[in-house]
Image (cartoon, rainbow, N blue to C red):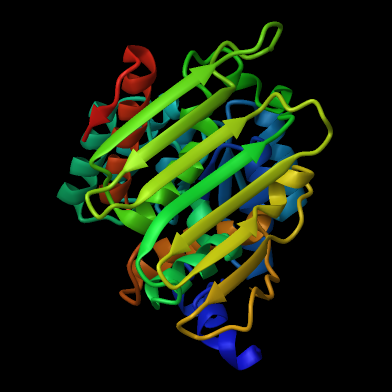
Length: 358
């Protein structure tokens, strides 16, 4: 069984070689930085040189916990540091365009937060500036590096389940929205902030759909302003049909997060372990049944890494490898523009009640 999965697991390894190290500065010291970004970099052995946040106490606390040498009072000061080569931006989407453009003006490579922006126009402006400068910009769509998803992607690429016909991701959660106070007032919430992970992964597997349809709802008494329940369907010219269903008001105590891919020669099924007891999480599960390999029924793939913090090693490592000329960014800004386009098409469908062609 080890031999069966050796090629799959090799493609899921998450490391940052010392030869790829650059001087990194971080803009933002919120929960995702202290709970995912910085633990990932520490695990990978990547030092962080500087950090800043609008809340100076948060920045100082993060610096002390993660042995960060410099704490700057503003993003402007951090970007003026000539030693910094790569900037990791982790701020709300509405604030990101100005910071990312300033980072590029300062000659820094960038790992941008997801979502990249709240508008397609801003996404296009940032992508154009990145192309103009020749600097490397990745977007932190880290689910592409989550081991369960990455291994499934590799199995599909190798033809283990033949021609794919369907892909579904279904999550039913009791989401602790209070952890993200900045998101509570957002009129567009679930698709833009949470399910964008899944929508981006659908694109990673299959490219651009020909048509999408989405619906959304709120629940009486919910704290967030925006939608907390959504269902989105995709139709591809190849015949693939994809479904993303997300419910964040599951009060039954049975959080679930499942995905499934079906093809002409088999199927893949799995779970996203992080979402079962967020933010602590657990490893994903992943099973494959293939007539191509072949397998004897359903065979479990041995997932050993976690979405948080391990996948965050992948997003930064991908940018650093590209800078070193030894790889391509898995989620480059030029590609992520189309994820933002897709998100806006889904909202257009929600608002009009009609399918939207892309």
